[in-house]
Amino acid sequence: MRKPTRTREVGRGERVLPGVWRLRLPLPWPGVPHCNAWALAWGDGVVLVDTGMHEPGSMAHLERALEQAGLRLEHVKLVVCTHAHVDHCGQAPAIRERTGAEVWLHPAHGHLHANDETPEETIARRIEVARQSGVPEEPLRRWAEQRRSVGKGISGELVSDRDLVPGVTVASDLGDWQVIETPGHAPSHVCLHQPERRLLISGDHLLGRVSQFFDEGHTPDPVGEFLTSLDRVDGLDARLALAGHGRPFTDVHGHVEANRTLVAESLDGVRGALASGPGTAYELAQRIYGDALSATTASWLLALARSHLTHLERLGEARRGDAEPAEVWSAGS
Ligand SMILES: [Zn+2]
Ligand SMILES: [Zn+2]
Image (cartoon, rainbow, N blue to C red; front, side):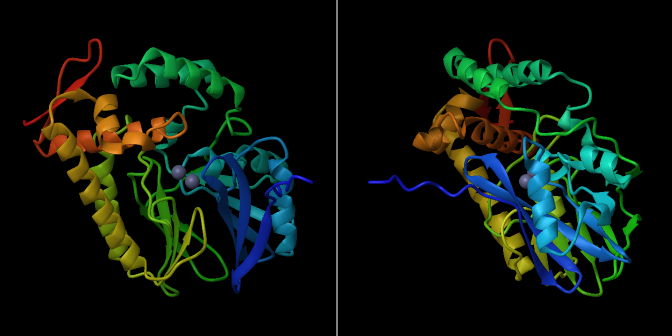
């Protein structure tokens, strides 16, 4: 009997609106099979919003997706990144090199650390955070080994030709898109809003399948920043969101609400974990997530736990103890 072979994901392109194409690009990550880049018609070319991650063969996926949309890489006149995560900006340096297109990015993209650190330094920094969170030695060692075996996901030094901040507009045949700062998921996150057509390019700020990720450790309170960003986007009254992963979705307000609910539930979960006694972020994460905390989910769930603890600290509901040997959190102010 032949074993069924899993078909390898490839880049795909499809028109979602006149002048807007979704480019679905494969990712090597478990649980996140692909990301979206968006091509917006602009004169005789396109603006490319997000780029996909860089890895062997990734440029061919992008070119295949563009071809299905009747486009070529040479049509890209401008690259705009919703934020500095490699699945959204990884191919930006290579596209800039090949096409001469400018790359626009929010100035707070230092959290990527790709420009100023070697992969070893990045691993060492992440290990330090994990150790401080009380993660035991053995899983840390395995994680570091795994990390060394994957690439950085970015095709060169990330250079921004223009700061993508409020007041800057991105021109297209559909009209101008406004830059909306939406930190929380990442400090550099922005959404693009086209007010006349009520369209929102939402990046990872709002996804069709509600999920949370906070790139924490760079700003005082990612959860608080995320909640403020949700309010900001809710006020835009957009009718269609083009997200960084998954299909476009309507009912933008409903998705904002679902995210607020998820944050509230997560904070309650952390309050509950703190109520059964002090613990390191890792111990609290074990109490909150139980069996869901595995080698593949640990760094994501630990970041969630740390982000929510930091938010509760700011609300005066949690206290962090000395950092040696690991930070112990307790309830109260
Ligand atoms: Zn992201
Ligand atoms: Zn993403």
